Structure formats: structure tokens, C-alpha cells
Image (cartoon, rainbow, N blue to C red; front, side):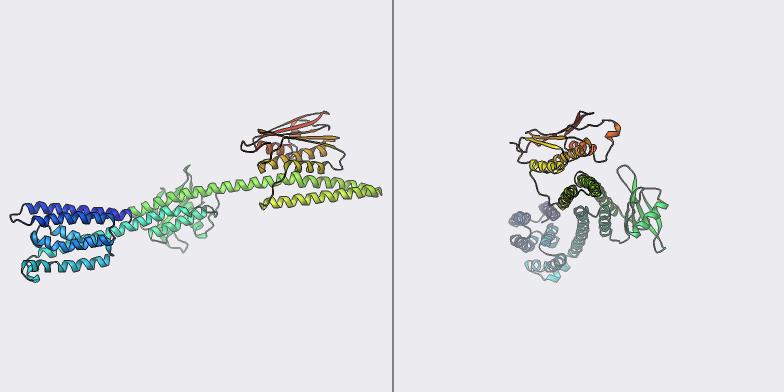
Length: 519
């Protein structure tokens, strides 16, 4: 049983015990003496029925106790003055115990039959007819009217409060599905439908996104009302105004301005209603529903912002990977095509054949990288052995370049974060490509060392070096700045030691997670 039902039971029992106590006081002051045994039996039956009713009011045992109590009432009334005695209200209150056992329609019918039949056993016990007994006590019919008036009032109040509780439950449960991938408009339409159910009217429009710098409402009718209010805004945040509908009719409308946490207006709530046509309860529903909507709307905006940032970060990562891999390989293809054209002009078939072979290899490498990028975008990327992958990548880059490769590794990490492995791989790839393209080096040394604390990367060449001025630092969108951003994105450090013509040394250190194993 609900909390509301239990409160009703406690209230009914409390009223019945109060009426019983009043009856005892009045009965004790009467001149005539009654049966003390009957009073004791009434007390015992009242206590037993109350315990059963509180425990399981809808059980068969409780129903039997209620029936026994109702059958006992004529005996008690006969011993204590009948329908004119002090226990008549207590006896009538026992009928309230029938309500948890049946619906209201059956309750009205059952109680009416009991009240009509009650004078019959009292008349038999008194040795008279039922008509004579009832005619001598006209106040009894007034008691019946009072009983049904009370029952109707309780029925109406309970029905009203049940409707209010259902509406409050609908407001509470509405937040479960208001936050969706459709964005803030879904939260607005959800809150609008909720208000239509709560207020019992269709003339409700929740127009959001009408403030400066925000997207227009995708619904034409909401956009119409938003533009209408924006041209002639109400003087107060909550006011009644005459609004022209899309059909050209003038309608009295309750307008509420929606404001964010900074106090800036971002939309309006419009409800068709006459001046002061919304009751206090309606305004309470509106306030609760709008509190729920504002929380959902703000959360949807935050989710949208996070989604946009995630998309931008993913696009930047894809651009970085294309530059570090495919773009570099295509650059080498263009260089070798230039050399091929020169060889063809010189009719050097041997050199041309070697260049064609190299170009073919670069095209295959680019094709492989593109397939790998597609797999990564689909979430199908597989883990690889970092040391082997780095060594193969370096040999591919330095192949047929005349650069001597020296690759060293120290330590072993059987398990590592995939984003850290990718960062190390692309960092070394970018650095090696820069050496081949710009350093004019004869030797490239790469050392990759892992400990329980960090990864250390060393890329060293004996080329011509470069100048560390503003012009050099600004060169290339995804060059040195891209390398540095990769390392710093994992809380690592990045440094370059270069001179002319002392070669270049690039060093990076990336901390490892403590939970990762190290051997």
C-alpha cells in the first residue's frame, strides 16, 4: 500500500478512537446504567480490528474483523441507548473500514444497505417494528446525510490529491528521457509536452534559442512566436500579453522569459490563458517543470559542446597522422618522380627501373597507411609491437636514401597504453622524415628506452642542423609544433639541441602509468 493510503488508515483509526472516547464520556454521565461487558467487548474488538487493519488492511482476516465489528455495532447501540445514544457516531465511523476493501461505487452501495438495515435489529431487540423505531428517531436520517457528505468530501479531496501526486510524479520521471543525442531542442519539446499534460491544454509553446548568437528554432511555429516576442518583449519576466497567432487572431497569453545562469534571455514559455487564468497549482507545476527543463537544457548544451570538442580533436588527430605518414610518403614519391624524369631524359634505364621500384614501394606503403587509418576510424585498429614497428618504419624511411640507420632499444614493456604507443611511433616517424628531408645527414641514430617510470626517445643526426629562431619555429603547421604537442599531451617533455653544422639532437621523455608492467 502507498504512503498516502497508510496515512488515510491512521487518520480513520484516530478519528474512530476519538469518537469512541467521546461516547464513553457521554455514556458515563447518563443516569441509566448499561452493560459494562458490552463496553469491554467493544474496546477489545476495536483494538483487535485496529491491529489487523494496520497490518494488512486488504487481507481476508482484516475483512473478517471489519464484518464482525459491523455485526457487533447493533448490540452495542442497543445496550447504550440505541440510535440516540452516545455511540452512534462511533458505530457509523466503522463503515469507513470498508473502503480499503472495495471501490467507491461499491462502498456507497454497501454502506447505504447497512444504514437502511441498521434500525431492523435494534427494533427487534427493543420489541417494536422498524418503522416505529426509525420514526421515533428522525435525527438518524440527519446522521446518514452527514455521513455521506463526509464521504463525498473525502472522495473528492483524495481524487484531487491523487491527480496532483500523479502530476508531480510525471515531473520527476520526465528527466529520465529528456537528455538525448538530438540536443537541446529535444529537451524543449519534451518539457513542452509535459506542460501540456500537466495543465490540460494544447496552447503551450517553449521557444528556445532566440537569443543573440544562438541557432534559430527548427520549428516554424516556435520560430514565429519567438520572433513575435523578440520584437515586442513583455515588461516583466512573467506577464500576460496579447499575442497575434499565426492565423491572425489575438490571444491572451501568459509569457515567461527564460534566462540562463548569467541572467541572459535565451527563450520564452508561452501558455494560452486569460488574465490570471492560471491557478496557484498551475504555476507550481510550471515552476517545477521549468526547473527540470533548465537542468536538462543546460546538460544538453554541455554535451553538445563536449561532442564538438571531441570531433575537433579527432579531426586534428587524423590530420596529424595523415601528415606524419601519408603526406611524407607522397613527398618522397614526388622527389623520386622528379629523379625518374631526369633519368628518362638521360636514357638511363637502370636508374629509372630502380626509381620505379622505389616509387611502387612508397605507393604500397601509402596504401597500407590509408587502410590502417580507415581501420582506426572504424575502431578496428589492432595492437602492434612498438619496437618492431618503429624499426620497420625507420628502415622504410631510410631505404635508398644513403642515410645509415642506427636503431637502439633498451628495456621492455609488454603492456602499454595504445595512445602512448601511437604518440611514440608518430613522433619518431616525424623526426626521421625531417632528417631525411632537411638535414642532408649521412647517419641517423634513434634510441628508444623504457623504464618503470618513463619512455625516453633520442633522435640524433649528423646533418647541417638548423637555426632556432622565430622563422624556423613557425615553419610548418604540423612540424615541430605537432611533435611537441604530441609529447606535451601525455605530460611529457620535449627538447631540441641543434647547431650549424653540429647536427641535431631531439629528446623526449613520456611518463608511464604506475599500473603498467615493466621488465
